[in-house]
Image 1 (cartoon, one colour):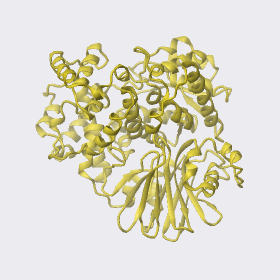
Image 2 (cartoon, rainbow, N blue to C red):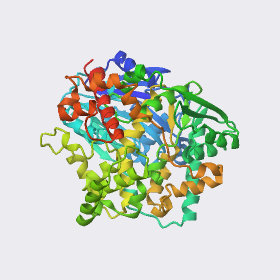
Image 3 (tube, one colour):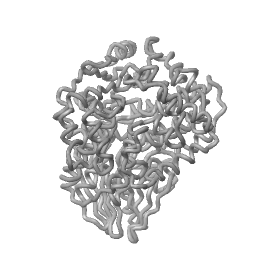
Image 4 (cartoon, rainbow, N blue to C red):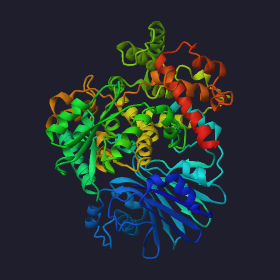
Length: 613
């Protein structure tokens, strides 16, 4: 796990890179210049600590800077008879690239963002992993190209200007869709994509080398027993690789859920006394007793970490500014504190990221498993709209009434709005207050949405496909990468291994959602590994007291930032609606009001602390 930066026709300031990304690579920093190409690497040493130094060279032709881990690199060396001088996965990448060119990506199981310079062809190859765990952003104009692992680094290197139209995506999605960023001329390289850049002409060729869409359109006919056996085998292989592919100790986050429980249980087969961590937050649901059942069963080296939000007001700006862009997900707050606590004990930790998106872990998936809302008739939409207006909304987001209210709201909508309502649900039903100036700001995402919605797959497959492409990529993986790396902690995600990414989408829908039971197959697998008390626990995630924060601990910064006459929000949101939210005079559910205000607060902190300063 490291940080990378590079440029063509532009001299990098190594000092600025260190100031903005040293947390990604505190162990070693080094640069390389050849022709008009400048490459820089910041290293967090985990594998082959002595032999894995970067930038790394091969045959005086190829030079690589690499952020991430290739967990099956030893298998690759044996399979393709690759002979190197180190035991580093970085050298494995160079050797395999020399042998197969861009086609080598298909063989990799790992998380990665890397750049390889070919001094003979004068070309720069930049690639990103299937799910997009490791980030890379790039600036391009007619004279230069600059790339880095973080937006804050590009901001330090270049005089960037904001791209106003992209903020409409943030207000509806809580993130910048796909390759979009807050800045002009700056793009994020999409998951499963690569760039080939001609360093002489600056011509950029962008290609998709992997897409989960292809695997949703290729269902398998495996029985439940066969599916269970294959998932068990793939998960064991993934965890074994992620435990053994490290020269440092690997631990595991352990909550009271089945994802982390399975990960910990299997990991204990490859590390007899694995360190596990459970966190609890003052005043919130305590998962420690359930987690301890797993820790006791596998005799792990277990620690319970109590975390409070007592310093949230003082830490707020620092945590939000780590992202380098507006970031709406309030669980970024506990994620940061958890990562900081874990780093005190070790540097590498396993997590359960991706399990919900691949195996059907969210409650909102249940209705989509019964009915394809993306193909509803006009009669159903109109009837649902009438019923929704009759049924009052609930302030309790977990209540049965609120569930049915959101279900009716969902059924009454059209096209993309169905997905937005089922997912992040920020300004849905209040989107008329966005000052869009008649711009079809959702055209880009609507095009991609329609391709999935019109595909010959089920309603459940469609929403899971979208969640993987949108929510996982632009929110959840970003959240964990920044929270972990801000604390120089590496997070490894076995559920996002190559084999499960390419097998799970084709599993029968009924094995994922059975009746009202989410993640059915993983729950059945859990019977082999976990105590019975854990198997049927509902998904919780971090319980965020957002409503209380907005009304109490963070009331002052909300009013200072969002209520400012110079707030960026006032360019995009109807000012009467905005002032009504602040004064709590808009008729709106309390949880939704808090979510909107938090979304705007995050944007204002970015604008004033990241952009203007």
